Image 1 (cartoon, helix red, strand yellow):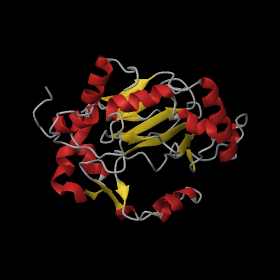
Image 2 (spheres, rainbow, N blue to C red; image 1 turned 135 degrees about the horizontal axis):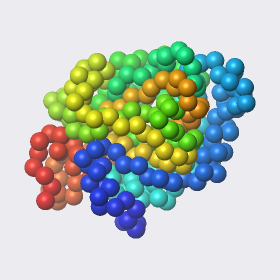
Image 3 (cartoon, one colour; image 1 turned 180 degrees about the vertical axis):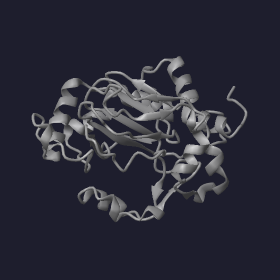
Length: 278
């Protein structure tokens, strides 16, 4: 394994809370390059707020060098090793979609509680996403999630702009990743469809909430079962970020003969009430 990147306390916090923040995971220069490109893609004028006519503008995937750099720095790769296991993941080939949130009086339509894990039964669904980012073309009933977290090793929230409390930071329900395994484990490897957002809200409402704030270049490394939500940007600065996926080469296991559980697996076991790792 590469030299340690996250401290023991940070890894323990990830198992307990479901996320860890890596400050300065990529450079501010890279963040600025990404931000400038995203401004162009939105067609909005950064100097003219009258052009910010929607509460959220979701830019389709871009895998140009600065975007790839933002999710593939050596520090991030070391963190992926620590959290999911050395040799158990594959480097991100694109940093997901880019929800650019503008200050706007209207409420966006994407603020439901959810967790980012799973796969789609139609392997061509990604083509619809690339084709202008129109998720309406994707059958929502085709998404599935299982206890092995097929399709997702880690979720990354990459900040391309400074994000304060007023800038529509992602809302995280701390420890909610422990509530999800009992909901999906009964469905086994075949998995189940996406869990209703109201039901997720009910099952995780007891969890404290924190805001994913930080500076451009910071990355939140998130357990695939952590429940979180976007929110409206009412009067903050335009927010630029990406939601990237670290995909697994090896699926999550709740039983390993050698006991070499990754922190992601330790959390799943904890949620299922299995014996702690010695």
